[in-house]
Amino acid sequence: MPGKPLVLLLSGPNLDLLGEREPEVYGRESLADHVERARSAAESLGMLLEHFQSNSEAELVERVHAARGEAAGIIANLGALTHYSWSLHDALAAFDGVVVEVHLSNPQAREDFRHKSVVAPVAVGTIAGFGTVGYVLAVRAVACLLSPVART
Ligand code: DQA
Image 1: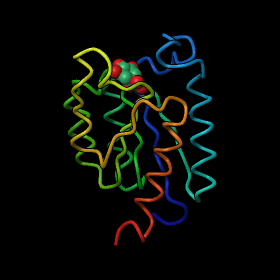
Image 2: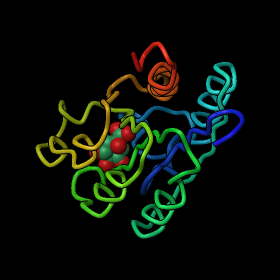
Image 3: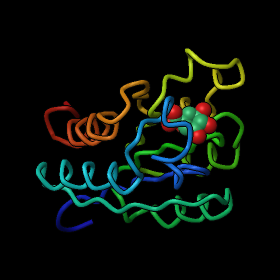
Image 4: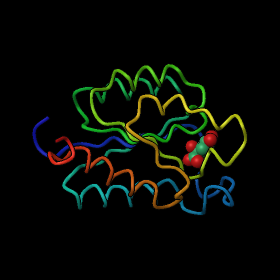
């Protein structure tokens, strides 16, 4: 992986509706707004950021496979797939870089079905409940984890 490290930001089902969908839970910013902020945070830390959104579990699995050997890190907000997609769990387990799980809301403070994450066991950690700043925090976490100091 020569050059600047690539961070893949993965967005799962229904996140394409951010800004319109349940704004009292997810805020009024669009997915494009979040991605732009994450991209500029990544660039200011010397990394490149690519975003991929899909409502299809299969497409998300394929994108994780393609990230193997390509991306240094994955920031994943897999929407409801977080709670039951063992195929995404396995795909992320096969990814050789840093994985950070992100949620705009705090799933632990919501319905029971959101309390389980199948992503969490294959992530370094989870950033949840910080709304609009969550993606920027996740980018910073990836940068720290990729820095030689963090690895020592
Ligand atoms: C979410 C939380 C999930 O439970 C939900 O299904 C989403 C969004 C979040 O960012 O807060 O779609 O991942």
